[in-house]
Every structure is written in structure tokens, then in C-alpha cells.
Image 1: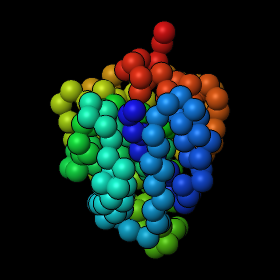
Image 2: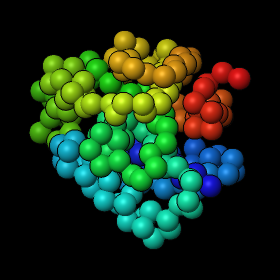
Image 3: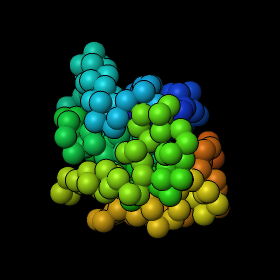
Image 4: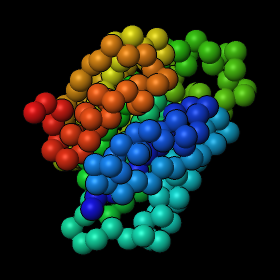
Length: 199
């Protein structure tokens, strides 16, 4: 049985990924749904905390031999899982799915940084100008699937692109609740199982 690590976005909790987690469990995956204080720290600190939580969970319930560990993130959580894949990958790292990912930063973060940057400590790492998102390397050979929303007003379609992405699908959804749609959940399941969104 493969394991899937779920990481939520800025200002959310692990509950926001709950329906996706239940769908994945019904499909036969073990799920580790991680909560973290997304507004309190910069990205490396947040990602290191999530990595520690994931490592503890995998140590407590080790995957069977041959099982892989997949990563799925939403919004800021996409940068967290990309950081983990680059710097503290779990054993037998599998595939990665990014939901509405600010891979090039987000124009909205640049806009709101002067207004609420003092409150949202991770916001500078989401900006286009900061370049933090673009600087996270993608491990060679990692299969990355991207699901973007054509009605997303937080992360533009061009900001979701990642050099070397394996597959992409764009659906008529907004940013915050894209992971709750059943067709999105089915696409996540399909990519984790096959490395493809189609067929």
C-alpha cells in the first residue's frame, strides 16, 4: 500500500484536505494529512516542520517494502512538498501532485505583501518578485502532475507552470476549494497510480 502525504495551503488547516484524504483512502492509499502553522514562519521552517511530522508518521507506521510515498500539496502546500522532495525526501519517494501551485510565485502575494506581510510571515515566499518558489529544485526523474484552475483569482495559470512538469490539467475551478471536487480527486488518484491524468 502506497502512502500519500497531504499538505494544505496558507491560512487553512488539515481539515481542508480531509475529503481528498478520504477519497484516497477509499482508493487504497494510506494517508498522512499534515497540519502546520502556515502563517507563522518562512517556507524553510514550515517545510522542515512538515518533513519532521512526516518522518515521525512514517517511522510509527512504516510503509511495506516496495511501497512508495507520494506528495500532494495545495497552494502554499505545493511549495512545502516541493521543498521536502528537494531537501528531505521520504524513502521511496513516488509521485507528486500540485493543486493550484504558485510555482512561479503569485501576483496576489505581491499585491498583499505591503498590507499583511507583517501578519503572514510566509507571504514573502509566495511572491513573484521574491523568486523563492522558482528557486526550489525539482529532483531528476520525479513525476509531477499539476492541476490548475481556470477561474483561479489567486494564482494565475502561467504562475502554476513548473519546468519539467510531467502532466497538466486545467479545470474551471477557483483556488480555495479545488481539492473538494470529485473529478479533481479522481485525477489525483489516477496520477498517483499511473503518472497520467488521461486514461
